[in-house]
Length: 443
Image (tube, rainbow, N blue to C red; front, top):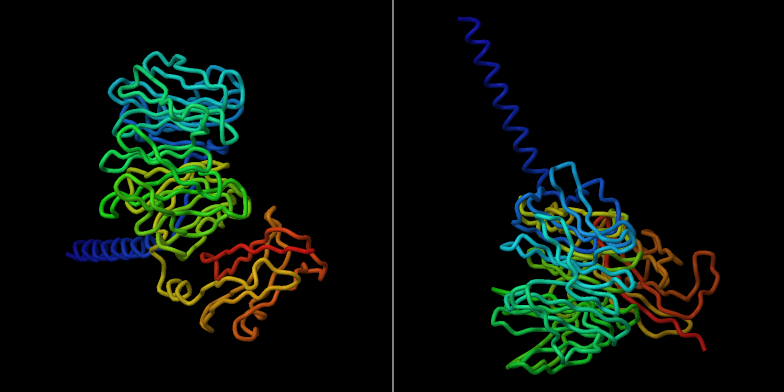
């Protein structure tokens, strides 16, 4: 009898412990989190796609690895990553599976005479050339209307190929000699194509365009229930770099709505009700942005030590996540907006405003809104190379008059800085930051 009582008590204790662990696990799952996937991939990942082709492990994940010893990569088992190429100095920049035919289309390119579009047979593990291209390829992708392959260089000298089934590829002649960087398709089948700093819309086989301030690097379309909203990353590395929403009606582009300014935005994705913006720049890398005019910007990748963001994908075994391919591998982000009440309060009580005047010489006033219950806030100024030139401390922020800081164009050693583009970034805690651009012009 005593033994039964002891066993019953042990079961009760075990049950309580299990419930506590489950409760703690639920709490921990609500904390913003990053994990590096596939530790053996400590190199740039230019593209990622999932496929249903048999024989590929890790849920059918395909990877495009650029550079020397790069190529098409996938797992044949959980611990075995295989890289396939036909030249050790020619890496892959983009991939897309053709699942019914057990083949993968690969854009290879490193600025050599072998750059082009290739077909990889998963069964034989052999490549077949589809077409060479004189200038570097940018993408190969599958849309509802077929496969597309775009390439080019320097706002010219490129083209766009199309195939309905992947067997026969033909050039869309309108884009001959244009540097085609991306193509996307909305729900009604309308194509949007970027070439140089032009965004094109297709209308019954003809194309009209709108000029943007900088080179377009990516197009992203938010479908239902967001009314086929079209966003572009315009990021050629100039003071005009920004993210825009493309306004269109009756197959005509009517204008651009400015969403936010970021330096060298490269890729756009979506997470819950936010846009995710990945940049190619060692100063700024990964942001959540409200998809509205002058939307709130939250930096979310500062702890990852990444410099460049190349691609996004959804990881199939979790909800509310995305994978990001970077210059140092693949990361999985989860619960990126499920933060504690304290952090929400902190985020909602910190705002960075535009500096005035801008451009300026010799000084400018940077305004902000910070409540007294905000923890650890500072203002940092960076040059265009990403080098920090000036820091205003937490004490200076809270002691400032009218929540304004005057920057006189000097560094932390009180030495004058040179003319050029500078970024000022307001940070609160470990997970929130806003950044804006300013221009110092000395005569």
